[in-house]
Length: 80
Image (cartoon, one colour):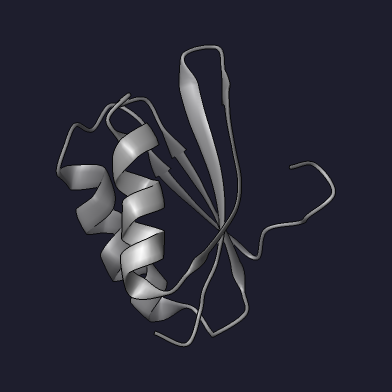
C-alpha cells in the first residue's frame, strides 16, 4: 500500500459501525472519480463493511492492512 499516494485521508478512529461507512459514503461524494482515499479505522467490522461498500458502489479497494490496532484502506473512487 505504500506505493500509492492517497489524494485524501479520512480518519474514522474511535468510531464504531455504522459510523465509519457513513462517513466514507459522504467523503466519497466529495472526491473526483479516480482519486484515491485512505481510510483509517479502529473498528474491526470495517474489515467486512468497507470491501462490501466498495463492491456494491463500484469503487476499487486497492489495498487494506492492519497495523497497531488500526485498519488502513486505500480506495479509488469509481464511476458508480
